[in-house]
Image (cartoon, rainbow, N blue to C red; front, side, top):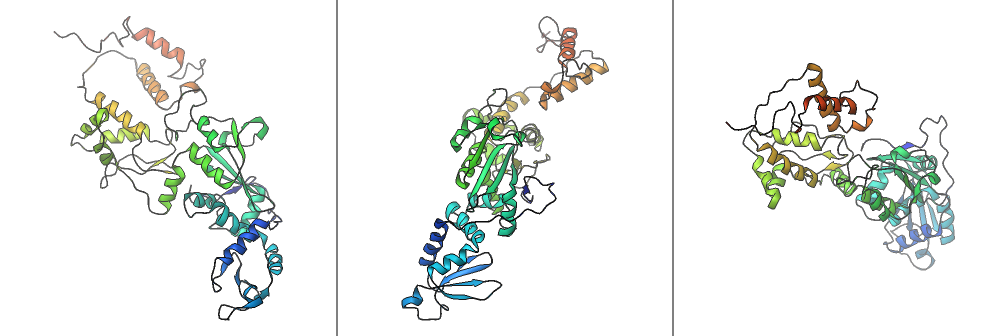
Length: 404
């Protein structure tokens, strides 16, 4: 997803979006003056297409008196303007308000050079498109996907960014038909349960419930909302972009387990890593988690299972994986036995269909009237009635056979 270009809200529109008129707000102009005050006379404040500095002619002059209070403007494609008063500078910057407000948003409103700033710039492709192109797109609405979220960025006539965040399934639904929120911390309640009211132990599972919207967030609140819904995803995405993602592989993670989870360390039997492949296939598939698995068996040994296509990386086996592995370690320690019972070819295929449907979470999609489906509820109940004895044993064969 990192190479994906953002789309306008209506990507099928045939017309070229118009660049909106942008006013120069006083706080943006004040920020320019403050920035110049904090610089040496020979330091230049750069914007897209031009730069501004103090001084009438240049840093090589001995500035004093009125000259020290003057400003100069250097357009990239025009003649330098020198000896500008503060009023002159305001007029010149007002003519270039889009570039000034863009600088102000990222330098002063967003601030720090870190994950928040990188994420907000990524939303509108600020490192790949010009201010003019981005403001035109923002006027239409730029849409980005982040997991199951749809983020729409727009711009006001003062260059301020505003963001609409909602479930992707609620795209196009009017705000007044959704539950609207303002505080990023409200997202904590929204991610706790799925649509059926079941607890979500894994916040990056593709089971986020919809029906809500944060319709008017500023840049900082947008970041906090996204990080509340998908904790640490932006931070790890940024670390990966900066080649600073610290990955902890399976072996290292298991070696530091203790207590009830220490049993997982016994699962390495010198027979390769097939069991870890099974864990990754069960838990780390795109259908189960929106992260892209970057951890492997160890630093020198890759797993044989694909890591997925998620936008944000998974840097180590999570608590859900460790907990599941603990249970499977105990189950796999059992000695295999041979059980014999009769199935028709269709019944064998039906058992396979049932396992697939449960594993893929498709049981709710199978209609009660569709008895052609192997995992159909009535067809499964018929199979149970036919094959289970009164003690619930398949084929009448007990799990623990009587010892002779």
